[in-house]
Length: 119
Image 1 (tube, rainbow, N blue to C red):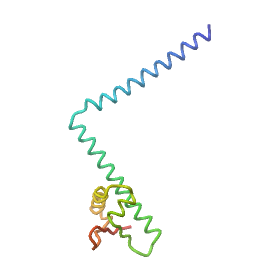
Image 2 (cartoon, one colour):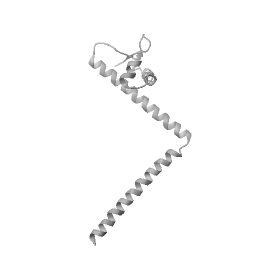
Image 3 (spheres, rainbow, N blue to C red):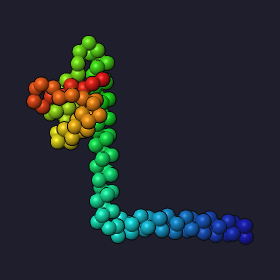
């Protein structure tokens, strides 16, 4: 008798857990499907800004690493080489560099397409 009651308890516990997990997943799917265009646009804009910020941080970290390797000179990088190094599209790298320019963490170099990283 004890084995039988224990088996029912375990099955009911697992069944209840399965129902709760299914409900949470269903709610998440419904929120995504039924969100308005404005909410979707806001969510995508937040995601784009977050990715841009992460890329800008990666560029700054790359500049510091290069400066530690070669401490006597300035760190000057090309947009294309930086995009290749970070495995990102060149236009995304340029946008991140412009963000860093506003923060005064980079400067435009005299050569077109080159940037001096302030480390």
